[in-house]
Image (cartoon, rainbow, N blue to C red):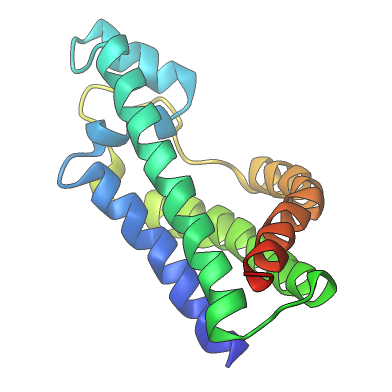
Length: 161
């Protein structure tokens, strides 16, 4: 059952990214490295204020949906009521999501799809290298350790009601 839930959770992650960018990679310019962003601004493909607003809107919705989905999976679907069990499940989901993002989203989808190439920015690397992925995901692996406690706390809080 957990495996199915992990697949659904990661699919939700990918769907949220796709909905966030829609049919134009420029809608997700905030995902790109600074050199790509700067080139897009210089080419007047986007402006900083619009990108900042879009990023804030997307990230707020994205984190809210992903958090609500995770709490619902753990508390409602799995029926977890205690902090310790919620923590273990939250940590598993957050770590799988973390590595899914780095490998499947960043390396495979972004790295092998023409969709993410922004015209005029050719020659500027926008796909993370394997060492970059490993470093970033390693750091996030550590960050999700306390992050899972927040999720578990919410699950335990909702279990009391």
